[in-house]
Image (tube, rainbow, N blue to C red):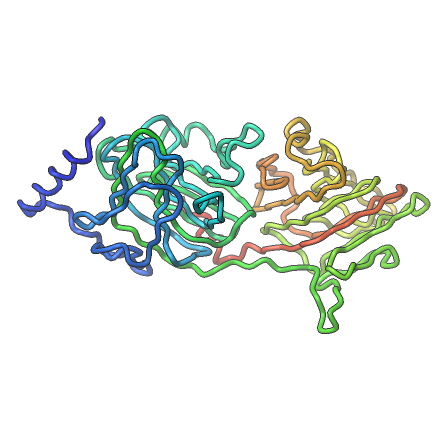
Length: 430
């Protein structure tokens, strides 16, 4: 139902005069309010020309019709891991959203906000989905970052939407895990690696109309999850491995700016490797690479064996082709006996060929492993998200230069973020 801003405001004012206005919710234990209910202290407007004001303990945003840019009322404060709760209501139909882990950059004559957005719409089944404002949205045919969200969850959330009334939003970010709820219904449960910290923003989308009210905006600050690098700069200014070791160390060297270079000859049948010292069970790991010939991989949950290629387990494939970020499960040799691998577990060649950078450009591949769930990403786009009950549950991380091939590899920003037991307790919330 379309409700004009004037009518809605008048109705709310009458409720106040009769003592029927809904009071601000008590802030739950561990949460703190981001809005004082009186003014916009602690918030700053970025982007377009929409108008924001405080009215009856709510923040109200109103579209200025036919102006060119989306507008965002943003917290001055940045948050890493958190649980955000708030309520919204459309006063006049339009398009809106809640930014999180977001940032801004100069663009022409305005600030361009970019980052994760919890979509808010009066129509369709999209409220609660994740759009990447100003960054990855609408690239390669991808609109929603949570492309693998099952339809039944979307349907349940949509059925709970309260037209013309207050709706409850919840967003949880814990390391790489992003989850959203609408009116208590889980919508999105995804893993992503692009940003781990940023501001929160209330969006009014550019267009012909739209007005939204928000209230009870509160957050539980859970700190900030950090990447743990395998390449570090020593006190002497030179780069070195940490918490990992080389196989065939003569093939590896660091450049002055911290890029790991590997050169491998077809005459060498063994693999050149970087292998982590410790095993990792639940984690997200990523590396940026470029290559000249040969074949490589980001190994994970892998075990050391007697094979010339040493590691048996999963490879997030690096092939400089449509097999980049595909999952290969390799064999091993123990006490002279071959332990078979499973070969290709999942591929997505057609999409990968769109996403991957070519002509010797850098690519970033990423793996999130959580129990039986394995998620692969290439240059920020999810290429697979599967449940694999046969998968190993722990093992080494590694980088590979495949034996028996001439290749020259460059790696940078090889890092991991373990998912701890405390993080798991939050991620498992339904």
